[in-house]
Image 1 (tube, rainbow, N blue to C red):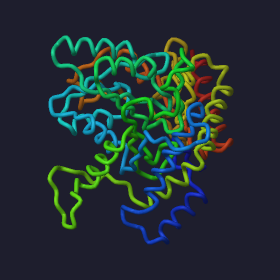
Image 2 (cartoon, rainbow, N blue to C red; image 1 turned 180 degrees about the horizontal axis):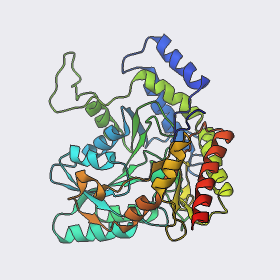
Image 3 (cartoon, rainbow, N blue to C red; image 1 turned 90 degrees about the vertical axis):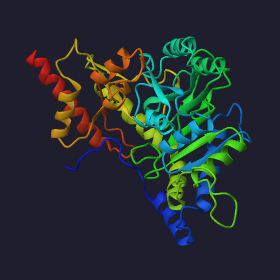
Length: 403
């Protein structure tokens, strides 16, 4: 039997055609028309995804997308655009991938971690409020917040964004996992923040890594709200080369721009985005329905803050109801050629960041201790999905009988 992977790339004829078109054009260097087109198409998608504001899908003139080599590069540039300097404090979601915190260290700044909210698994607005007040009172206020939209679901920006505005800090939306997600304030249908993920902060970032819902194999995108920020980002991403005929550099820049061939794949993927999301949603619903007889399973609370993209189907195992641990289940799946993965290990538990400050931490620890991600790829077949369900079911049944 072929191995079933967690979230492999789902590419096909459309992406192949786009890649060959770019290759045959001769634009193989990391510049070219595919990059410009990918950026423009992403602006149009983000503009049209919120029909209430742009029913005709016309591009917004206050929205700019910069295609980059990775989501991490986008985070780094967002921090630089926010004027983060050595010694500054930057608040970061605790329950996230390490790139969110590492980008802060690139700037010589100090990450301060915030716990999760059980109702969304995302950053807890109450922890944010406590951290902002505490750090301000101590005389070293936070300068920015990096808020992760975890597993393709938005955080509660209806509460988070006003807190950031009140304290005058930059809100960087780490939507690396959330392209195609739509935010909806659970208490207000008229919130101007309602709309596609990536637009709720001062800056938004996407990742197009190989395991993401929309992939270019590797790459990312920075979303900014004005022309000057977009120009600055592109300048820094191309080694800060001055606009002169010779190579002149007056400040440190980076090799962060996306390549033309990569962008072509992204265009093909973007054209398929609704289908990619629909496929993952079907998998999540199928898991829920097939495993409904097992109350020891609790699922990620998708839908709490809008329409998710269902990037990964994540579960929690109730230790009071089963002897099956996430690691035991992971090994049972692996023995049958099925990849699964623990939920993110919180940043405050990582050796790299164990000395950093954390507000809260018990929720993210609990999620990590009891959670597992099941195979969720857009190309997952019904037969493969049934293989996963069978192993999960058999493992839970076996330990029920043992008890």
